Image (cartoon, rainbow, N blue to C red; front, top):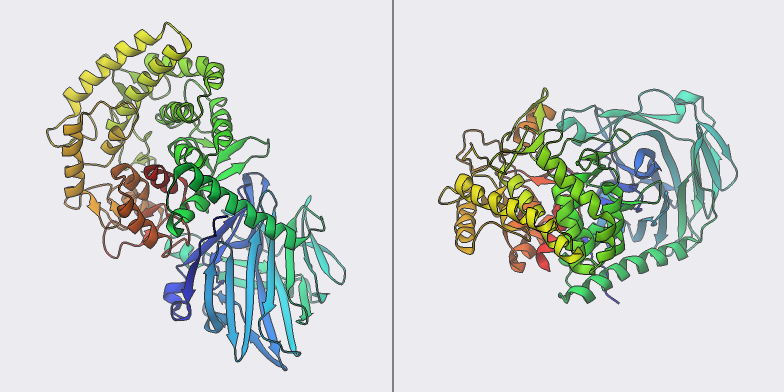
Length: 629
């Protein structure tokens, strides 16, 4: 069976806090929940925590176990292993005792104290809102005592705890159950004893944690956490296990759960390499494992895709750009079909929801077209004509809405799609006004429209449906008008009335049905290489452009000005090249410098080219995976 990949961060980088605080790890549970922090264990975001649960998967994600304060006592002398940033101080400084950090693919912290080696590992399990932390010593010492103080919260990942919460606790010698309204968190240990915190309520709190990454983003960044008590353990066992479970009191065999989760991950890798006949290299393994993090089961047992960790939810556009890489490249065909069903049956006036989250948002003009593209690719992989037959009327309805006009988009007299601004993937806005409005007729929208019409023609042929000829005729008109109005001689205009060189034209080169011939494609790629390509991927705007804003820094308004105006988006690299050596070079550097084992949302478009945004973005992973096959 294929081995699991590993990333190691050594002591020199761990003790340089300016470096180590920017290296984050992430493990997930297939429900939208996760465990994540930095390699020192110092939380730098409101989104960090050891147990982030999905109360209504994947919705209503809450931080429940923020972290565990750890002390080890050796022959009567105490060493604090935690690292925290408070308002005016870093305390304790456990990171100086870290010997190494490994992700394999679970986080493992190794501390060196004299001749004693102490190891901590963190595990999450598929389908369970639970986290397990194991502690062990490699060297024998009869006088080693471990003290664990869990820090608890109960708040949305988007908010912070400011006031004292009156948690109710029930405890025994080995566990504490903390009531959170109708919910609860149970924390238990397989060894030692639990001692409740008997201080007055206000003294049970750790005050003024300061989250540096949120501060840099101009967001609220100070909060408090609750300590219900202390686990005290004599380290005379080979391994000590602390487990936190949300709304779950099952007495799990943790060793069996760990073995099961390791086996599940290895089977995912085995399936991928068996299907695609690629070399079993770690950089590819990280892409496959990262893809797994984004495929989730919802509260209604349907399947969906999380667009990005930590803060994104279910986005229609992201889901269907990502589906071929996340699901089809990895052989997860049932998941692909179920994801299509999840979004397809929520269409409204021909539009796939751009966001699922209670109040579904229908503000994407391309999500439906990306979905049709994904359905076609699903069919090519599975030959599942029965599924196509069942959904065909819905697909016809989508095309009809686009032809006749729906919310923000309609086929114009020239058969191209005319649309309002702010509805493409470049949708950042400040004060309600799109930064890159792109209203009119954007290049990738026309390419997706032509592709969708040709796919409908293809399916009509397979189903002996007479509508195919009309789709064919409209597609021919679209192609003629597209070449006439978008081809500049060296590249495709970004909009019918905007000759800016942007990477959106790459989409027109990467769809199954293309309007561009090989010679034009060669010229376009040369232009992209000259104006947009960097060693870190494809910029969203040429460096010479007056609106070039390469660095994604500052508050939300400042960041949104740069979001699509100079930053690099890794998902575009998968559209630019299929060269495995280029992709390998990029992935090998990216999985070790921001979200470990992950591919980020974006990268600054100029020096020092730092990775930014979400530490793991679905379409960043997906298009790179798809480019490999």
